[in-house]
Amino acid sequence: MEQAARYKTRMRFTKTGSVRFIGHLDLMRFFQKAIRRAGLNVAYSQGYSPHQLMSFAAPLGVGATTDGDYIDVEFAPDEAEPDVIMKKLNDALTDEVFITEIERMPEGFKNSMSMLESSAYMITEKNGIDGSDGKKSFPNNYRERFEEFLSQDSIIITKKTKKSEKEIDLKPAVIFHAYEQEEFEKMIGEKLPELHTVYEGESIFLKLPTSSENTVKPEQVIDTFFNYCNHEPEPWSYQVHRLQMWFKSGDKHE
Image 1: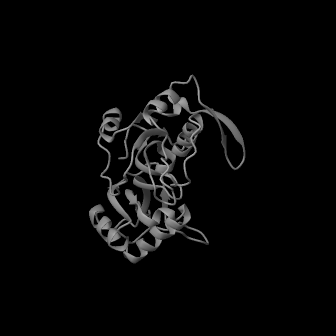
Image 2: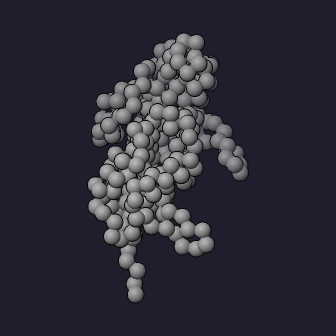
Image 3: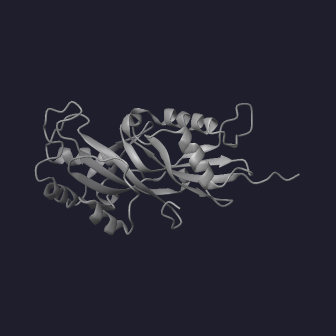
């Protein structure tokens, strides 16, 4: 007898508040427990140690927040409609981690991690908080300085991984940049998801590559910019917030 196809979903979620300090594996366990508490009929892998069929588009750095991250979860074929799943799951989650969008995916779709292409970020300065003594986290005239920074012929850094080091050019990695949300939305051609967290301070908006072949983190851009300006901010003096992700084959987040 042929086994019925699993019910595959892609969910966008928000992570903010104190939960931003938990790591990727803890966040996965957090979702796994919430799915069990919600009583959802999640699908499991086969073998000696079955686990929930769940995958994230990309890990979020410890301390960063998001309104635009995605998780793929597979359910039994007879599970309820997406809006029912979303309500049940949000009832089991918290006001710091919750689902904002859910979509049922067609058979044969590739998971978010393999299709992820780029991400948008908002980097906001935090002045006089989180242990800072009031020293500005962005350089003076940061907009003009950032334009100078990006006008260089190349911006070479050494990118380190667990296995190797290689030099990359950050300049082409900055797909779009802006200093106001409305300006950034015009550049990317769409409205960003609703922001569920508010940060006071000046911001830099970036669209950067986020694929298995080429990933550039916003911290790499900002820290290299600070070095260019001979600027030394206090630790944790800026906040990284992921705004959106885009996937290959023409869909934005779809």
